[in-house]
Image 1: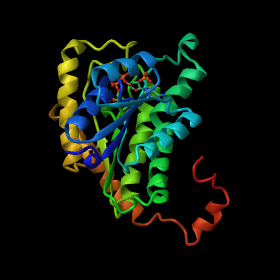
Image 2: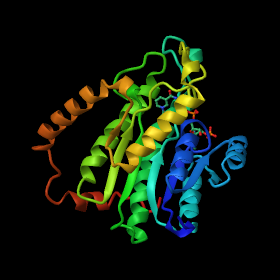
Image 3: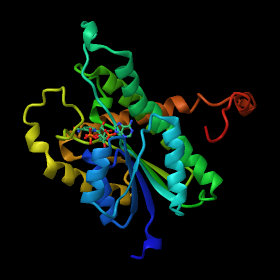
Image 4: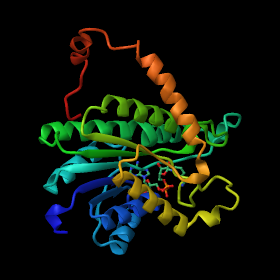
Length: 275
Ligand SMILES: NC(=O)c1ccc[n+]([C@@H]2O[C@H](COP(=O)([O-])OP(=O)(O)OC[C@H]3O[C@@H](n4cnc5c(N)ncnc54)[C@H](OP(=O)(O)O)[C@@H]3O)[C@@H](O)[C@H]2O)c1
């Protein structure tokens, strides 16, 4: 495949953990991959390890970094056909113990796991319109978690921020149903990455490099096949829970709709298109 034939994918948090494994498998599947992360050492290691990977430093919770990331995308000269919202953080905390609680950590979790990927999704769709890529098939692949479907007691804000992102993903899929953009949600099983160093996860050693690579390969295969929900057999309770939510949503959305003329009120409140 020639360089110009390779479609472009952006993977947030693509220089470490599951994101790096996804980046490798996307490259192997013929994508040109731009991966971002915050930590210079991780960026350097990914660059050395996977020379074909385009690597750029960006904190997705920082507006100036998001501006730069979008500029980097445009600088490749290629349409962005795949956005993988993968970057995430998780912090243990205990609401009966003040010393474990911090406004900054709570904000980081909510912003990284929820607000930033929502904003990046908005920019992705805006770029498609601005650049005239609207007719192209594209995919938004959101890395969720089974822990978005029930409360995790040791890290409730992780669960809550991911639950918010899960609902956003389901709503986005409904809104984009008639467009060429497919919305995919990926539910990784327990993997021994850098995600939760402050958690006790018995037996997590068995979910190291090999399991991460296996799940990344499985996920990329699912993305290429256009599967809406990607999860391994061991967390098949998702096959029960998610369709039940969808069925309730079908019923409610059949009568709760946007009011006639609603756009006129919204336009006045809108921020500039690229902010
Ligand atoms: N591991 C599991 O068991 C598991 C299970 C279910 C779901 N997941 C989900 O899988 C995804 C990947 O997590 P992981 O397990 O691979 O964890 P990880 O090893 O900690 O990797 C997280 C990645 O996100 C990047 N990142 C974090 N904050 C960022 C920010 N503000 N801006 C840009 N990049 C940022 C990190 O790089 P820097 O630190 O260098 O920025 C790193 O590359 C997450 O969404 C997580 O919720 C993981």
